[in-house]
Length: 161
Length: 161
Length: 161
Image 1 (cartoon, each protein chain N blue to C red):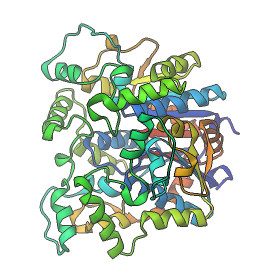
Image 2 (image 1 turned 30 degrees about the vertical axis):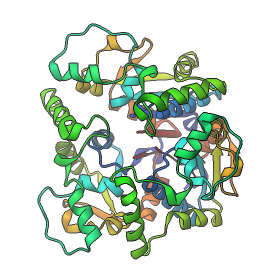
Image 3 (image 1 turned 135 degrees about the vertical axis):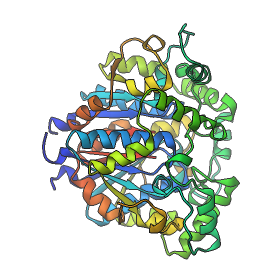
Image 4 (image 1 turned 45 degrees about the vertical axis):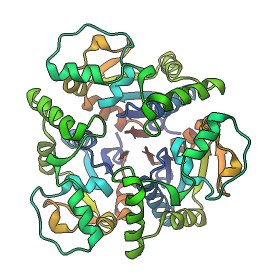
């Protein structure tokens, strides 16, 4: 395995629970196997990184609407299929717990412990009106140029949309 | 083209007919051109590999619900857009037949004939309560570590979600 | 950075506004940094490339239905989430304008100026009954074999679905 192939990047565009679980399972698996992993969160993917508590912010009307309507963090995300107004995610979380599969919150924690670099896309934050204060600690903030520089040096690059 | 670039992997996360057709078109195309191709089926993607007939299984309530509500194999999959309660997929299959484009079932058969390695994700099977008996023959069963080992040696890695 | 890593390919399978913006932001960013970028538009992604005006075509019934129901170009695309019957895309476009973020139409124009190669998938065009006359100028037309040849020589390959 060459050096290039030992780096991996994942763009997390989706904010769906099932896709977020897939993204973090791949990321933590790769990091556990010794890879340098960079996750780049953009658009709805930023919702995965939102703090669960309400954060006081000063925003315009549209940004406030986005803030209220978008899910705050792992516990509030829906499924991409069979969501059934939130019943689907609950059942999935129940089954995962029963089978001793790590929850999304645990996977995020583990990603941090394993040194996975998590970058929040600043352009998306700007468009969706998401501020740094609304996101969990330990993130980096950058744009597409940073992603591209990382991807060019990586052997595996995925887009999870 | 180096050896690394002659391997290709595709994660099939989606269980939508249109995305499954895309995945298998790429996989069979690459295999026909001499590449070693590995497809890794996870979450809803496992539905593509389900046998069309009912299989008697012993399961808990939630798993039984998943079993009943999820589509069984290529003929039952919906479209990611314009599904119209199943009318969309029917029209698409009709048009594909008329234009002599291979159906998904034919593409899966061809993938097998061309030696495409098809791996069902064991963690997803566990979470969704899908057993080996419910899936078509000729599959391998493995987890994310196996996928990552394959991806690290491949030149093209796609996530179809 | 090796030569292989200086090429990038993006399969654009989705016809959603938000995913199209992500695809073109990555493509133009990479091209601006000196990469050779190839975008391969397939299935719903072809709608991004449709001319906004009505084009007179001779088609069968199903193809005509697809033509009428699918969006014609960047201004008509919906969001993958929070579409709200077209209100979501309008708000997003409003915010992007306010924040001086390039619109999708501008990003497509820029991609062309930067020499991004845009290929329309001929098999998808055939299945969906989309003719060359209905698409914007400056495209190439090819199938999966052409995509695979490009991807095999590229260091970054993404599937945006």
